[in-house]
Image (cartoon, rainbow, N blue to C red; front, side, top):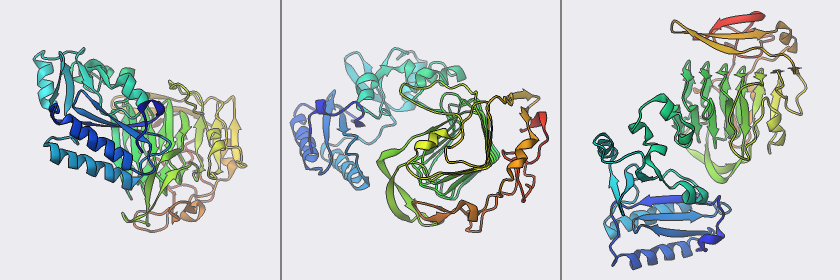
Length: 442
């Protein structure tokens, strides 16, 4: 249903379709009529449109009535029809749109970089950011200087420029994937990026194991976005200011070292697919309430630094899951230096004043983890993590298994060494010793 722009909140979703050319005055009444008709006839959705600079079609959609998959397909089909009728391209968001005087220009990225090289544009040139998501961002930062956009590295190609807080919405990501079904991400050293690993929907059956991540302090080491599980995160070393951004459900976190904060956030506005076991066949769509996670045999440490965004709350340890909508299954974890346990956890060690003094030392292409460990933690008498222990992910009703469908046993550590099957050590290292240690982790 078409509603006034002013009635939509700052959190309304924005979709921008940049035209490959400016619309002619004679075309404007017809395309406005088509846009108005489409918005009026889209049932169950409160939205409006804007036609900016006679070139950009902007849809603003209420966050209270988000598009489902069928409605999104209808919108894209409508835009494709506009492309045919008016003989222009609207679905190419990769090209650069920018202002030159009173005119809006569009260039392919290589051509725009040529303008940078030849001083045809500057850091102050206004560009249009089609990656924005909300009405607030549309009003505040759709038009920004090129030097503050993802194009900034064209003017100054340095790590400092690329990881500047001004470019916080443009991520340098070591590994990012959609639909990482039954994928293994293992044995990587990921550091000094913005975001380490990002698995965005349909990561059913994925496994992230035996990775070292640190100094990814613009965002986080691991972002799990709108997945329903099952997926396994095991034997990793997460040392950045924020270890985990969990906008998913149905995950298993086993034998990890978390030295940064954990952020939990539901996502009720989007319905995303879940699948039959070890298949791309969609079994259904559902939003993310949060929870249904398992945390077994991990070590959590408070003390990492992280710059929080306004109104954002994160915590060290698992206390943030006390408000999760779905149950969380927790056992055998260690909490140090102020990290807080899950409220319903019984078998755990908490040493609030114990600082393991974690730091990384890089020398001669090797990386050593300096850490203080306590053998008394083995008194937890932890269980070996298996398919049977992890149970079924609630939404897809699928077991935690190896990618070939065989039963899962987490019986090796970060170094590939066999674990004590009777009482495995918490954290990524099996029986590494105690006291001040310097472990070669890369």
